[in-house]
Image (cartoon, rainbow over all chains, first blue to last red; front, side, top):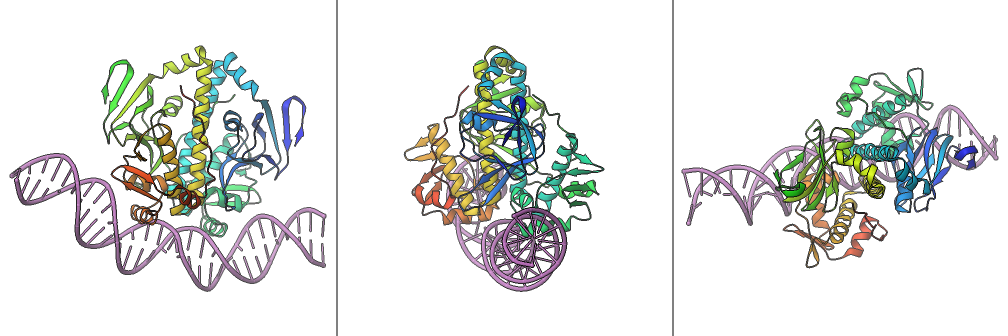
Length: 214
Length: 214
DNA sequence: CGACCTGTTGATGTCCCTCAAAGGGGGTGG
DNA sequence: CCACCCCCTTTGAGGGACATCAACAGGTCG
């Protein structure tokens, strides 16, 4: 983990920012690159809880609760902006508006986790996958991580399997069944039939939420 | 929905506090009774996202994002404390400490949702159920909702099925397989073998988190 | 060139869903 | 007060979606 000027931090693809159980003295906002938060079970299984895209806040929960409940690692090289936890109380005292934004962000995040829960609980494999790709595509488009009409997505099928709660094999086979609607090759996602994908995912095409910034 | 003095609100078992999509002008804290937050899919399936116990904050996300993403209904008669959403900005301006607590609560809630995601994604039916009962027992004990060495839990097997992402039938059968460790009858949960339950659930017996209050 | 990781595909098994039916309790109306 | 109905619970039978096991190809790195 390299330190840059002004609290900027750089980590490489595969590196871990912090582990489950770590006591954090800093929290972060993601500036460049992508990562993910994982939860590990005693038997070695792991669940990808959420992807981390530019603009996301990382480790706030760990700072507040004094103890990380997830492991954060980088799927591509990343740059993050680092804040000392003592800055947090200052923020609330001196800048109510930004503190308000913070709660707002937490609320948006919570609402997204709730939708993820609904997906894991109620949707079939192919439905989950269609839903996930629509979500990811939307988020990545919003932050401008695109290349032509594809979006950049540096994860593996194993990551996706752990995100959707499916086996790697079944993830691969389900992916094949979606080839008529989308492609995922060389770290690029291309949605060729968004309508069909939405129908499979059982999503009502919703307007993108405005995400507050710090 | 009956209004009491001083912003207290009473709703009856089965009543809905608000629906998915509603625009809320108030948010709440639960004082008495229990409820749940649901997410509904177009095909009629529903997912119980989280249980609502005394002390929990309800509808904060809906107020902030202007639009509820979940439906909240009561599993028993409930009493809630109601706050106008305009109070929120006042809170941040005038009482940084309580605003700080608010973010803290949101962070705890988020961390719990993350664990739920891991459960739905990685645990088998019996593991999920064991995990859920341990969680519920701990929360209800913490808020003092017990009766002898049982805790009060006014939900149905259908609710539990929707919480765990299982069918009602399989929920019932799995429940039967857990009878050597626990009982759930007449709205009361009794854990007769917590150790065995923890082993099934693959949980490390963790110290209870201190939950901040408003 | 070999070790390793990622992606791909086939065969086999199983956990859990769906369908079906019956009993108990509580509420409502005759 | 009893008949009826609805909701919740319980149990059995059968089928399907997904997991597990196994093997191979391509790419990257040491």
